Image (cartoon, helix red, strand yellow):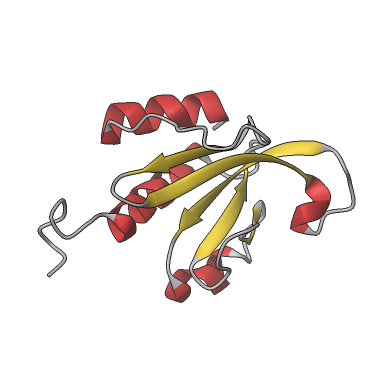
Length: 123
């Protein structure tokens, strides 16, 4: 998935529109319900520990500490850039990670960050 496909997906499934909060970073978009559940950024690959200054889109999603370690073993998934690395991951948006996995991780992140009022299953 690329950023446009993600924006379409979150609009269709969650009714979410991207928010651009920083004029200094016009390619950084926040997705939120009551809290942030994803951030899409354009960053140099070197910020992910890769040997390149080429700019690439990534999405940060919350997945919780139980999944972080296992997910980081997957190709295209990294410790979160500029977020809590115990609870968040960065996903490279270059086709390495399947659309289905990105969609599942977006849904999980949305659920984990949903307010109790919006999510009756959290009590």
